[in-house]
Image 1 (cartoon, helix red, strand yellow):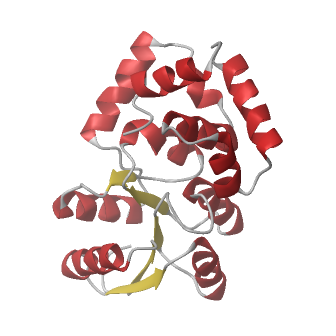
Image 2 (cartoon, rainbow, N blue to C red):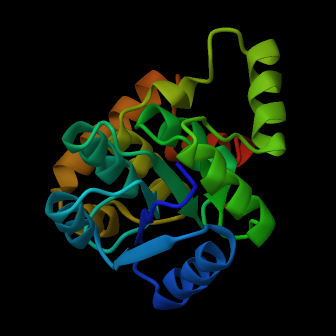
Length: 215
């Protein structure tokens, strides 16, 4: 993919300073790169509809839609489009879910520019990129939990509610931020308790902390 032809990369992130920094790294490390920008999920979807891209770099926390949902939609709309995530959230929290949603790499915004460049080039060549720390963690989880971790079976919405509860948000606040009714959020909370085999919200919070699902 990287040669004399123009490489078209789309950055979907709502922070201009992040987009500008990533664009600079790409322009310094990827020959003949053409970088596009979108500051929301809606703009990102529109950009993918308007023209073909060789790679989309997506943030998890977007103002109008969860990044994991966007990954699924982009993967469904343009299955040939390689996707990678660049997020503030630690690998423990979202990496596995991002890969399941169609991403080929997951990096945090603390990643060194050199590693970001390596990941971009590897994904452009058609291969997944897994950081050394994530690879070790996944191998450790496989050896300790052959059947997988309980929270990895949650739906995206259930996972969002779990993280929100663990961050100390009230049911009312979660309902408002996710555009749900308080009754629906309470239903998700009950499902979480059942799926994770826990009894109280305090135990949900402890579970999330123990598994590094919140910072």
